[in-house]
Length: 382
Image 1 (tube, helix red, strand yellow):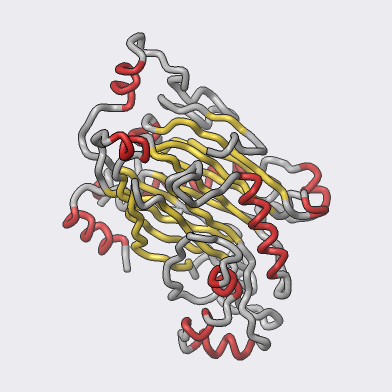
Image 2 (cartoon, helix red, strand yellow; image 1 turned 135 degrees about the vertical axis):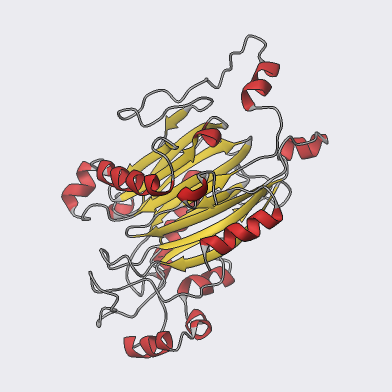
């Protein structure tokens, strides 16, 4: 298992994306209240089922109206993180309202540049172009450039993307769901078609979908709402710079046992292998770490996610910082500091909140068995 041994599966990072944590009424959009505390308590209680208390540290927390992004890291990973920046953008009411939009964060782990986004896009069957515009605006505001010239080396995007299935008649879709005929449904799925036409998520990857549509259910049940055409609203996609890392998805599924929402959360587990930073590659500098990293992710209303990182033995970040700064100091700072009642603790991480980015630059047991055979690995849950 994970580092907790008999305590069960653990990940190095949990990346959790929630939408509609409040009712999307005008008052809530205007007030933009932080309602994250109950969600934090519930998530941290769940983490303690598989890990000792204090094993995870909250390293990212950002919200916009009903959207909430939380990232938890193990202590070992937290002290090897730095450069945390958090972003928000509203694309809803009047083109700027926070009822729709994205919350995101960038950070470095062992020197590798990560970005995670939690998005909630325009609703309703016919609003395909509206969803495309939402994504394009988010990409521009956050300077998302999935290429070797961009700011990031690994990007995960989760959320209620709200793309629907272009089949008239819920009964037809439900019959195909009963047959588990996913390929027929996918051929009519809006996001799949928009990606094929190069309109959104250019160069991103999504794993095969082999689970039922995640929307719309009658709350408290696993029964689809009779008035809506079921759809895969809730998705996880990723991009990686193949020069410096590899990403493989171990599973991608929805969680039918969650009935508190009219959506079903989705989650995925990835193995991510860090091969060395782009700068090191260009300079021919050997990388101290060359170990697999795996990632799991989830998104929905609500959704959740997580991740795990391990690395091969080598100089610690503190040792490398001392090599650069003989005094032991660093312009990046040495600790999280206190934030929102003490959410951050640990070393080697700075945090800043920004609404615009800096200038561009089948089972867990089977997974763990495979990873033991493959050698040291890290897991990320989204």
